[in-house]
Figure 1 (cartoon, rainbow, N blue to C red):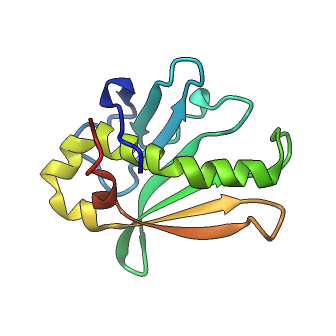
Figure 2: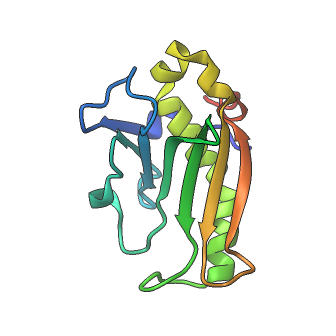
Length: 152
């Protein structure tokens, strides 16, 4: 995993969300700039769809309960109506770059994780949404503590 350049991470809180609450229902919208290499983490009770650009390379992640247990559930759009690019290439890019996105989210919301240390152990599952069954998969990305060791 490549070290995260924390100087490139920009964070915005919305919807009466702050560094400490709420946890359940907390949503992350992760976007980036190819030109500046900046990473944008928007944290709120709703996804920041106004930050989503036509190439649809955002990562959406939220705290929710499944079977009574807290999890971080996310999704990325590999292909679909209006999504540009080749599904094989987009899938490979998401698999390669998701660790950077998760590092940025964890770093950007570090006060929450420092206040609620147990959140670092919550499992992360991300659905790669695709019309092609080869890419339409749910992946296990470990826990947030896996994404804290490479900040610079």
